[in-house]
Amino acid sequence: TYTTPGFTLDLKNSDHHALFEHIKSAKLPCPNRCLPKGLKKFEGYGCRQLVIDGKRGALVCFKQDNDEVHLVVFKRCDVKCKLPHEGRPWIGKHGEWSVARWSDDEWVFVLLGEKNIDTKRLEGMF
Image 1 (tube, rainbow, N blue to C red):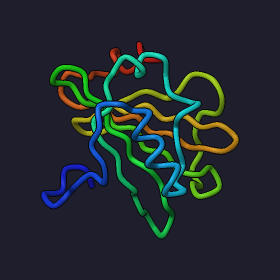
Image 2: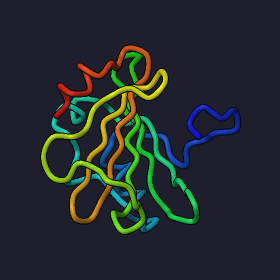
Image 3: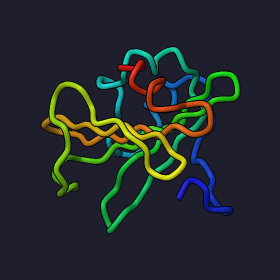
């Protein structure tokens, strides 16, 4: 979705708190209380709603210098796959993307890094 030519963000803002407020006002899953500590050092970039198989989630993009990471959040009840629960995320590669996946009782999270964001750097964010 993110690499599709027609992709746009609903809101662009360097303050990730403003992005979270936008997401909450749209009644979308919000990562505010579950943000990895290392990700808090990144500035916000933008956000938007994601709809997959009729389920509504949120995408929040962060930027540090020329590096970007993208956090996807869905309700736990809307995702039927097995994910790490409470604790260390699963971290690996999917094509050119570095990926971290984890969940808690309410939410499922996927953190995606491209280019200079390798799996070691993703792991350091937790």
